[in-house]
Length: 149
Image (cartoon, rainbow, N blue to C red):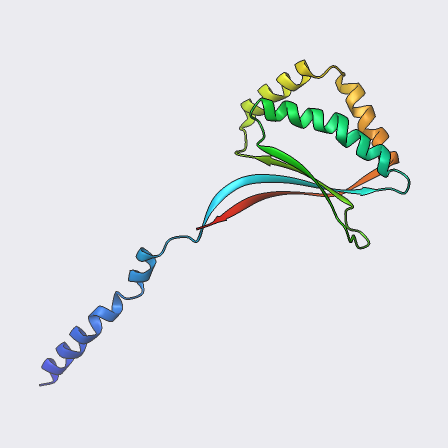
């Protein structure tokens, strides 16, 4: 009798053992990976707004358009922080990539950019340093969009 009761309990509990596995098979991840967003926060120093925005609207935009024409980036944006708190950026420069290049592709892109660019690397570095007079980089983030299903 004990044996029969033990078998009955075992058979009754057997389906329960497999329950935790069933939902895992039926579920799928709620998001898909999307584009990569490179976001740089900029603090514009007092009196430097116009000068920096002129550089953004000319040189930075020209470089972004070149990268876009080559298919290296999908789009770019300049966002203003309308209510910046102390330590927060005034502007965010956003570049959106469809994928991330491997090392060889990065080298090829660098060569193509330098062939296109009319300025030398030394000149570009000097200009970057000169922008420190009217702006400060307060941070960078590399994000990936999560596409909700």
